[in-house]
Length: 168
Image (cartoon, rainbow, N blue to C red; front, side):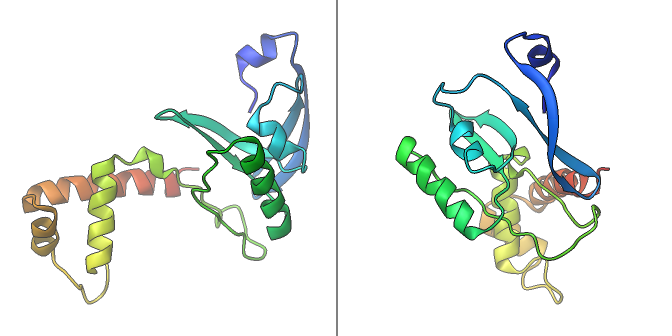
């Protein structure tokens, strides 16, 4: 995405080219000065569109689309050659033709560490299964919190996930 600051910068060519479409969303490419050692350049040399770049807790996160597993391997190999601390966090694969309502990207970073721990523990213990493998009291005990604290963390996490899944 090109923000207003980049658009106002005369060194950035703001002519946008659509390179990838999924459902009602599109990814665009814009030109900029090359050769600054940016990890995005390593990805883009394979014609893989970078759809998100952000930082969190001192780490740089790149989200990009690769056409197939061979292309993905090449991108990761190149990134690891140029940047020794590359770590693959998550891979998603598109399965067949889908409508825009089927594609959902959830940033798990929106959850606090504790919310993630609550979700992971509840899931591991079977709290979300039918019939339940564990009840709220058992999960709360495993987390060493009260049932009401468990319920608060679970509700906050579920709200964030549902907001991400259901937003238009």
